[in-house]
Image (cartoon, rainbow, N blue to C red):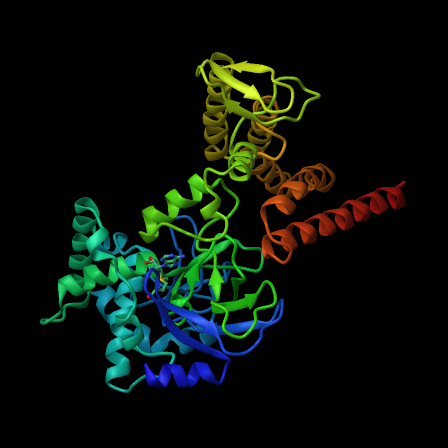
Length: 441
Ligand SMILES: C[S@@+](CC[C@H](N)C(=O)[O-])C[C@H]1O[C@@H](n2cnc3c(N)ncnc32)[C@H](O)[C@@H]1O
């Protein structure tokens, strides 16, 4: 711990402790918006490979990959990445090669992450790989596991996964209980590694970044530069401030956020947004983000359940919307969404787009213009239209999402920046298309 504190002191940081949260990271210098607070390479990481998509184990690139000829499980983009991973993969490769084909199929990214964790610990203890104050297994040992909070079903699953790890490693004195506990640690400490457009690529364990606690109104944000985790300030952070990032999607009602924090991280958030739960402002915001709209098209009022529980009352004009009407439209949305998923899985993008346009129309009838569900549908349309190179139509959906982004994300949030960037890129691509058309005539 002394070594870690000393390494952090040089970066203007310290580890502290708060009874209701456990360890926390605090600043010992001022940090300004956009400034890097801390960056860390992963202790271990894996790409989220599946039967349909593979990425390089070194840099997470896709395309032009070659399978490791020995184990036939791990992919590389070239010899540079293969060499950089070799010390660890040599051991993993031996272990994976001994598995039969069926067993190899059960080696999911989570199983590989755990196998790599144990191999890295072994290599560091043998000094084949060097350890530093911010890169050593002791830091993994100190991570919270919440073993006592996990339900029976989850414990059984972790035990089964631990047995598989043991079967792969074949170490005689391996501790199955410890592996199961490490799976629980990964669940509340590992991070999803995303690319610059915030698409998920893999999972990594960053034990120093994992000391940072959560807030739904964070003062910092975690982004990735390749596999490097980078925490940047979202606002001015004076000396002595606790560094806080958001573990979850912050665009949601307080109830939704609290539920997902309790389910995955086992705590009740008491951040400045969450303590307002049940207050007038919070009720209003939750109803706008996740509730229904006034049935009068001109009125943009949000609805709250009426006292007789007969329906929902518009808080602007007092008009009542019946439960039956709401249920009917919600059922139509569900039905169309099912059809859209089927057309997506059959690869019919054009049909999927027209289904989503129908969903959007139905959602416009039911939800408030700032609704998260409506925004998500428009986001899907934007992505699908971009796949078809229909820049103009994609731009129109991108523009519709921006006011919602502005409402739900803070000024310097990367998701908001990314949406502005997408909009600019689509404007440019649209103009380029028009110019080409003109020059062809
Ligand atoms: C990634 S760890 C953060 C570091 C942790 N406090 C520690 O001592 O190692 C996540 C865990 O920290 C705790 N935690 C994080 N943010 C919290 C918050 N805002 N309020 C209460 N507990 C929190 C929860 O136990 C959560 O599962």
